[in-house]
Image 1 (cartoon, rainbow, N blue to C red):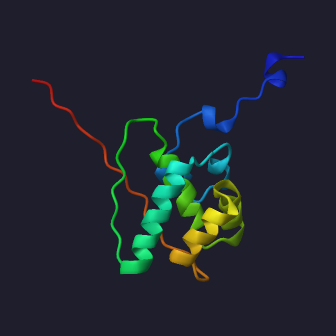
Image 2 (cartoon, rainbow, N blue to C red):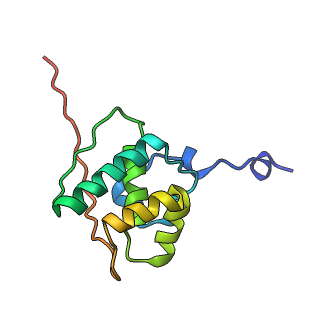
Length: 125
């Protein structure tokens, strides 16, 4: 048996998440684990949106810290497709998913998510 037939590399180790390419893709959620600190951030954001009906947020952190993975998972949770929302609810856990849905209801069409990310340019002197 060939080595390729014996070893399976999980998708999450094959390439980095790309917001523009992975938005709305259920396979992008494979292997995603939402730490409690990330769930707390999302719950705080959801409460803010529910209380003020406004929201603009900036997520910053070092490369590889999970920002893009978290935004892909959150967008799946707020998506208009019930199957994708259900898949995301399993990733987050029902308690967290229900709290986010309560604060940010998806209605029948879900939230419209616009994939946008910014790069940082450095200058050499």
